[in-house]
Length: 311
Image 1: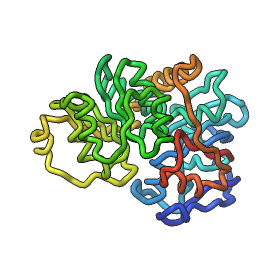
Image 2 (image 1 turned 60 degrees about the vertical axis):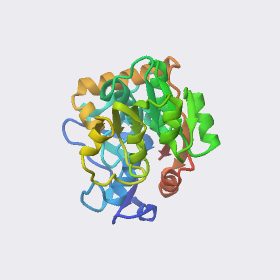
Image 3 (image 1 turned 30 degrees about the vertical axis):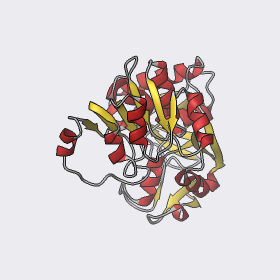
Image 4 (image 1 turned 45 degrees about the vertical axis):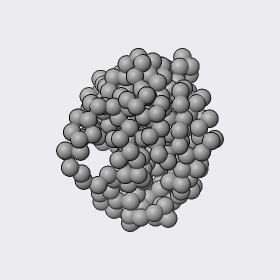
């Protein structure tokens, strides 16, 4: 089968399409014919070596497809080696795909949809009337977060890098769209000097300091990614000095640790999609052989929405 493998850590150029033997499932695991693969920033971290692991390695963890021998359609968020034509998925981590949702939408929605779900229903339970700053609101998670927060009655202030992306954020439900340059001051202006109740920041190093400065006293900073690099160590006393702020770094594995929670979150996300309450924008479809180009486009911030690979 074809798969995308890395033999060393580095830039997109280390992604190599190779022929490898098909994986063999063990008891409790499913062999799945992959229909679509989700491309995520965590794949970039894996490629660069931030996640460690043995080499050579087939990267990726998210996708959708059909169980070999049964045809049952499933999606997954945590199956290593997903950049391939076939992958082995732990049966306890396989999520059934409802009728009416195709495999590409399922692959585009499952990881980022679940992430957006727990970020604004569990990490912080967004309340009606709260002001929420969403960074990279035209990106995969950002668009979904904006939609869900707006549906819960939150006022979204979105950051984007271009006017085209600003339009995407407005379509998702953002009340205000601002540029990154001096965004903390703009948030304070838009909130009458008070600041945001919560900031959702998947950008990391480049936005972290201003994100803290955007918060109201006792506001919450949710750092869920590091697209621009990891945040350097800092003195926790800064949180007190900036207004007794809260800071959390959530991970999907801790919000889907039990199968019941995984299915509940995925089920609600798929339900919203089926009912037309949550729109999934696929920003790019690439053949599996073009994984390098997908990573280049993702890292250059040229895209909006979710990128997928199609074996």
